[in-house]
Image (cartoon, rainbow, N blue to C red; front, side, top):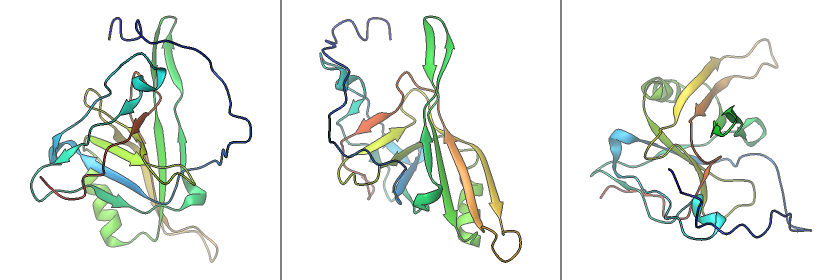
Length: 185
C-alpha cells in the first residue's frame, strides 16, 4: 500500500447542502463466501479520492453459486467503521449489524454455516437505489464477529437473529458499482 495516495488529488472535504442524508442500513444485503467466489474485484486507484474506495468491476461466483440474500429489519440494522491503531499506523474496522426477525430453522442454520466463513457483504443505505457499500475485500475478509438468537422475553420480546460482520480494511468501506453476481459463472 505504500504510495497508494501519492497521485490522489484532494480538493475539498464538504457536505452538499440540502442532500438527503438518512440514517441506517436498508432491508437487503448480500453475503458472499470466499469459497463460492471465482473472482474478487478491487479498486482501480486514479487521481480522485473516490477511486480509493470504488470497486467498478463485477465480482463473479463459481458455477452454480450465488450470493446469500439477507433480508434484515431496517430499524435494527447498523453500520459503523471506527478507526483503530497508533499514530501513522491506522486501519479501519467496519462493522455491519444485521437483525433478521423470526429465528427460523433455515435462518439459524444459515448463520451457523457462516459463523466461521470468510465473507464479502454488500448493503445499501436507505434511499440508495444503485450500487452498494461493501465490507470485506480481496486482502481482508469480513467475518461474523458476534451474534445471537433470541426467542424473545415475554409477550413483547423481540425474537430474531442478530449478527455483526466485521472486517479490517485500509478503507472505512468500499463502494461497489459492479453488478451483484446473482448467478454463477
